[in-house]
Length: 299
Picture 1 (cartoon, rainbow, N blue to C red):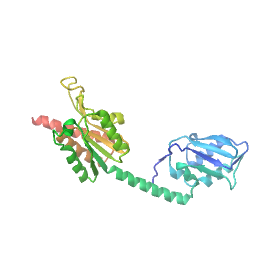
Picture 2: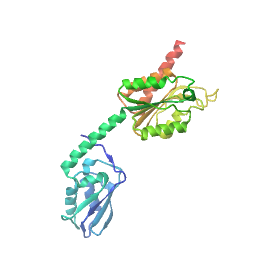
Picture 3: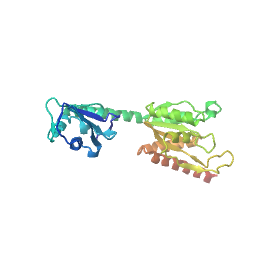
Picture 4: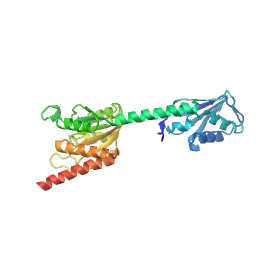
């Protein structure tokens, strides 16, 4: 089983207590600790050494828990072989967070880690299968037009074995849209967020901009271009957006029903082989462009 690296959550320090030091070379101490933990030597430093106490810091944010689990005895034995260091039955490692696995029993720690990783994988799978769909625009909120997108997309997602929530309708307010997406992606436990509407070239269209405020690296390919400054066009293109926020892939689709539905079908087909935003965006945009070309050729 390949272990994912776990975030140390700023608990990067650990102490070795009741260790006798007499002219010990602290660079050698850090090197030995790094070797035992399977880390680059540059990633381990001694930050304090006094009164039978050594404090070390790991200069990284993530760590393979299997690399540290049950390594206390091996670590103390290796340190005890260095000149100027004496360890005895009282010497121990004191650590928290992921580094707390140092003092665990090796076999029990490995079993516990296996269970933890299996549970984490199951949680990840469940999150990935949870979706929420939002429609945007004042005409939808006021009831001037029927919201056909959200029910259709929700049913299509359920057919693809997603657990779906139909989100509230959102006004053309990029800050509110961004806050809603952030809450769903960072706190709601969703793996997929779909919005429809607000991707056009008018000033009121700000859904893609809302996504970019949360994920500046989001993929935003143009579906077609318009003359900027002509009529109500303050932007030169109509584009979709696909990015990541928290646990979720966020997909911003057009509002017209045929475009929203064909975009959803393209998205679901692409999700079978990738969750990479750029690939998903390309698949959706290509489908929408092809549909527009066919429509223009037919007329």
